[in-house]
Image (tube, rainbow, N blue to C red; front, side):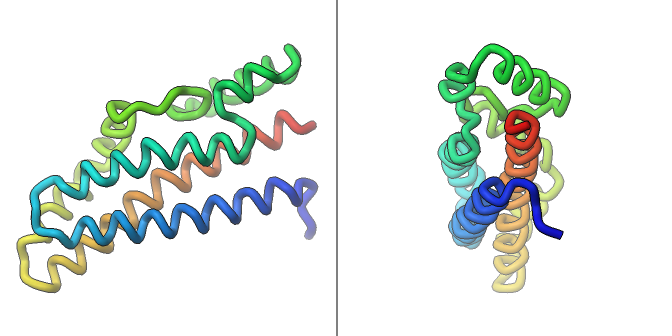
Amino acid sequence: MASRHPELDRIRADCEALVRRRALVSAGAAVVPVPFLDVVVDASILTALIPEISRRFGLAPEQIAAFDPETREVAWGEIARRGSQFLGLVVTRTLVRQSIQGMATKIISRQVAKFVPLGGQMVAAGLGYFVMRKIAYNHIDDCYAVAKVTLR
């Protein structure tokens, strides 16, 4: 069945490809046996990636501000309803760190796994990729849903 929003579907696919590329960088940082280097790298990547995804969907704060009043109200209503922690906000490293801490168990496992020779580094890289991709894909889903509502 064809989507009613082919442009949004294209943007979503482009964003997912972008996330996969950045998640590979995260996985690479996870292999380096320096404690918490990967968390710092993840925070840096997400601080740039989340606003880029929002911008591509037309949902950066300045883009939302430019909507007509009715559309802006619909957008903010949907953002509030979804409870997204990133949508419509200026993304800071603190906010990203809070999101990463929400996946603390995986991150702690990743830190410990780094120090197990070879196999542990592979586990750490896999977890790094998974955590980055999960956070960013959740943001893509939120942006997609809000953009669909505002396009009605």
